[in-house]
Image 1: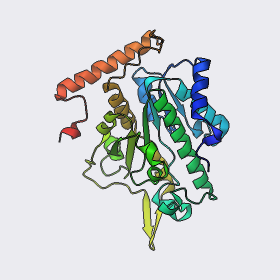
Image 2: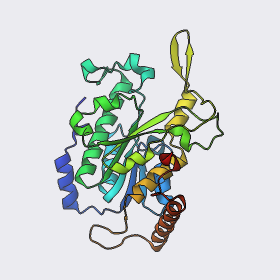
Image 3: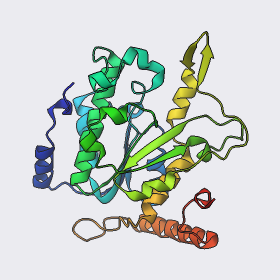
Image 4: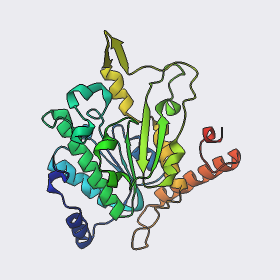
Length: 294
């Protein structure tokens, strides 16, 4: 599988974007967005956000879908947030016997196996989007499981561009009753240090609902729960957006220095900032979650 998805060239993409004068009018883009928790949180806070996901008819296995995603990334303002939850099904333990990703094949796996072919394409698309983001002055966030082989498949020199990370327990942000929350951890890598604000231990008293079953020496995934676990809880999206905002992103001006946002959006942002500042003052902290002070 070529590392350049659909023959895309980073230099040419950047050159064309400069010549075409693409308007940078987006604050947040969420790729492989699922339920779009991050984009929804950004919109709720008054920012302009866009998503790309198959459930919306946006297929990243096609050239058309890839180019549509590129166009959205190019529209992000400097300092804007590019978040990617790359599909993990071929990079996890559950299907490892079929995917055959290992050190000896540089974690490329069995490229004749369809999930591996798709996973490699998505990983290389994610790398291209991220490199585009680095060149355009964006904040890049990539998420997968802590033990995902995605982190080994991506080139080492690329991962060095994402030096900050956080492992977050999904249950911390789940509104289900204690004892009825799914057992899952997410790992985020970013080029921005504020991502470490998402580092959080589990604080549940009860047991978690397992995503797998064990029978006759075999571990099998529970399809419905695995699908449910792919979606970020709404509060996780809100926490990530709040961390990005409190790092100092204003998003009020276009590159030419003139505001392109509506009065309603500015008002929403002002209210969100006031809420964050009030929360920080009442807790005596910098607005980060209380568990960080434990």
